[in-house]
Length: 429
View (cartoon, rainbow, N blue to C red):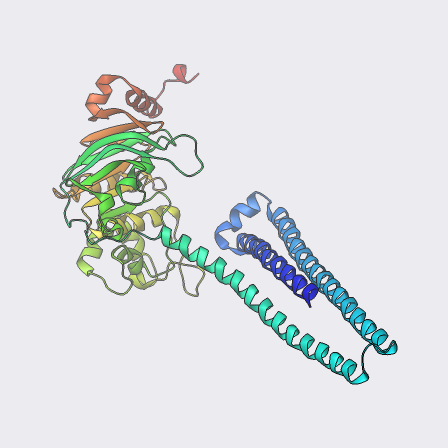
């Protein structure tokens, strides 16, 4: 029975690792299926004439899945056959030896019959033991894989602390904050220090990859710095409950999530609810962001489902979604408001209205507002501007201070301003 047991163990390990490969391939197949069927990708797929390429890749992956199934089946069959063959040879040798002993008279017939019965009984018992041990071993591998996965998930959970973030924030201090993305050689933030105060509106500017968005996520408590500290009113954020910190921050991203919920739920979800709303606050938020006209134009206004994946749902443009996202951030009414390129997909009139609302109309003395923008005309009225470059702050001050400094901010602003100046025919030529 030993060869049979060894074959069962090897077959179990092969099936375990094969299924993990098979599962990875299945996930990739589902990804390609989603790209081929999703309406959001349809226009660009046709424009790029990418349908055939995706279908070919889908076909290649399904062939690999079939090959994996075939390979596993053949491998398991060979192992089982080998184990049973070797075990059968051992059983045959045992019976031949017993026969020879009986013929030679070395063993009485009764003793020989008893030996055969003992061999069969032991073989049956060992077969049941091998089958049970094989099942236990197989399930143990899956349980071990599950426990390792759960342990990894626990490490990704928001930290839990008894200390919670304050309801109002007077100052946020960053002192020598450093943060690196996994697998990157150079840090995204390298010794960044700043102080943000309630009632102020500050701007982060710089080229792509300079660290602006990373810094905003550190402030929001989404990333923990690997060196340095972030303090809210003198208390280190790492000592606070993570969810309580994130609950005090409204964050509006350049590519907001399109929730497949009603228009109202897309606004109220920023407070963690889909079924409860403060009507006056919701109306105030959508008016300030310009989303009131978007909602008014929907067939069911506030109750319209914003997803074409469901019957009766409506589809919004990128600019309309941006207005909904800004309304979502304003409705949260948090003491920290982070706007990361929120108007990139808006028309100039809508963009101006949003900045007017955020920087002037809805400005609060107890709120810290951080604006990230490549359009420097929108940050002129900010109290302070931080210029990022390669993870460091290279310049800071008001618009006037930075223009007088004549550094990189002044250069970027001048380049953008020149693009809006009217050229004469001679200059254009």
